Image (cartoon, rainbow, N blue to C red; front, side, top):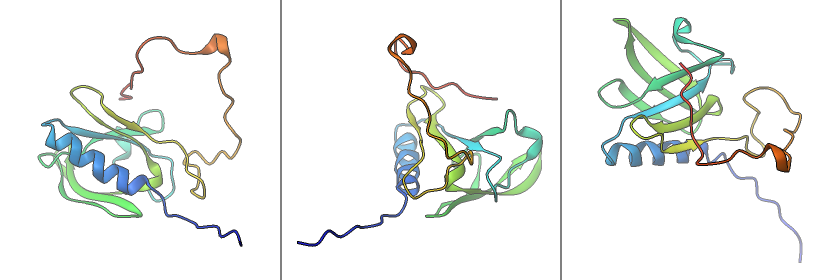
Length: 141
């Protein structure tokens, strides 16, 4: 029997769409964390801190949200100024509910470019470096 390798597309767009829907159905506010340094990201640079921006993507905050297989885009106002936002999906670092932090942080996927541009493998924490307690997601503002 011959071995066939199947190349699959990124799961990130499907997960972002599903988690956004799940968060909204639970009457929560979906926020995304974006790596603003990824090529093609169009966000208001004055709101970028530490290379990231956190965006509210709820229907009350944005207009025309489209989560395609390659990018997420919408129109929004920042300080009263309208802007078209464009985010390649590889730049989406996380999606979570504002109210309780429930959501997902994305790692790199096989065959997908590393958002940070660093191809070196991350070192795993040693037994003495393991975090203790309940996992948390911090909002970078």
